[in-house]
Length: 295
Ligand SMILES: Nc1ncnc2c1ncn2[C@@H]1O[C@H](COP(=O)(O)OP(=O)(O)O)[C@@H](O)[C@H]1O
Ligand SMILES: [Mg+2]
Image (cartoon, rainbow, N blue to C red; front, side, top):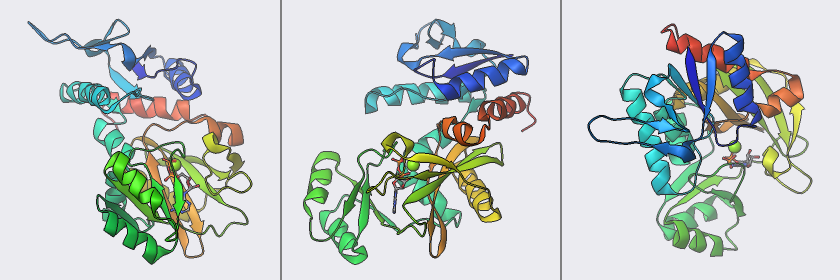
């Protein structure tokens, strides 16, 4: 069997781990850069990336769709949807990638599944946003399609200028109550879920003076032992968003764990660094089972 791995940087650790996992299972893996994606539509329909005919594959694993703007992301995403409609197994399914990328959609999915999630307001209204920050005293503003801890701000009622700026720039603001970590210093828990199992978890300890714990923002990966509560919430959150593999972020609070978000194209590097757990092999085996119709 031959699988495509959609990735921009072929030296990406997770993409390489998935490719090695597929090869160890006797399958072939080919890297596909969606910045080299074409769809000639005419007498027939083709989809090609990096010279490969995507209809000739047995499945796709999406590690990184590549981004530049909303319009070309819509093209890349639509290509995935077409491939899926024509029967190609895609991991993660396009709907799950889209739900995970859009923090509003994730919040709704978590809420509908009864997964604990901080109180959140998504609004186009300055007065509603101002009222939310006043009520919670401390609120986090996040880009609706944010990642890697970028563009986050901690807001207080004393400084309303950030809300005006975000609304003027984006037209919508995603606000969340700030949850005080019950840990000795701010950290979150990143769990890695594959095929209905939790592969492992790490604490990401925020750097001194910061409350943002993403590894890309200086967070340090530290082993986090699994507990029944962590496993239960991570699995329920992953299922709510519909992912086959995902990174689920949780916060420890005095009232228990709260799920912040589900990442639909997560890196497996942190859990490998801390535990030596190779999620590539697990993702490869899940993809093969899906392609064979047994998952
Ligand atoms: N409501 C919150 N209360 C406290 N800390 C938060 C909250 N939301 C996010 N954080 C911190 O910021 C980090 C990034 O937030 P997250 O929602 O996961 O966005 P991103 O997609 O950028 O990773 C979290 O891992 C956590 O450390
Ligand atoms: Mg996160």
